[in-house]
Image (cartoon, rainbow, N blue to C red; front, side, top):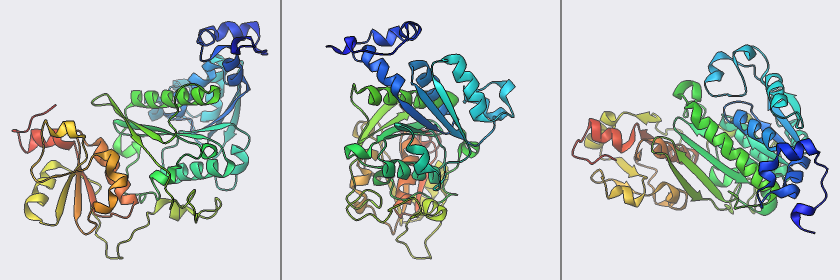
Length: 391
């Protein structure tokens, strides 16, 4: 019996609704039945959770869980497309439930009003086949990925920072790396601005949330290549997609050979938010980001400054700042021991997104003296050295 002739319990109305899916050989009737039988939990019904929920409901996921504690506010409407003006003041889960029911009445929507915590995460995650993390802060991301690991469930991570987005899949059942393999410890709360401080491009949320939905559908049905062990990075300013490989860390505090995190209570909120630093208590405190003019002054007057260019080799052929050290972003986790912790590292890329990502990563690894150059080499060429070729 072939995939398309496997028995299903799809109604004629459902078969008609999903006909464009069913026509795809990789999905067919059997794949559509898998979606109907699946239970997916979306954590955070905001900028990422909104498009993910809409596309998964439309795709025919049988059960969608929505975990969120917040109410709809006016500033949400710039990017959280589940809601409209009439929903302001309504809990997000309730407003989302109504919208998703209109989108597809065949999808059951379960509301989980409140925060996901160390006390309820294991029980909550156990009821679902897959989790989508659409949260916007590091403590919750670590909690979610830790809980997914302990329940043996896959979780699809998504994040946004200004004009850059990331998507990855962490799946402990298939021996892939976990979130802590990539980022063992979170940066301090005041080192990374949230979207209310830094801003966020609304349409980019739609792109990243849609990618999360796409990865969910592929995983549940079992077609295509997953993002296990890979991180897709989207640069909206240059409209470039890059994929970096991530590997299991044998010393990972969660999934390594000698884990120090053995349950959700092994790390308290302070631990989740504070990076493990190898510096003394007298570590310097440098700003997360500075203007090119400030960076130029530091480079000219401080011999202890290292300029780290994290662009790709082909970009260096276009332009390069003299005496900069070049390590592409994707190689940073594997060459971290080559970087001097005693120097003040200034990171730079094309527009400042990749270098900000590297800055956050290095700070999480105990490099307290790392600062991003705002606007990247594009801003440097326009403000400092007009002889540099822009691209």
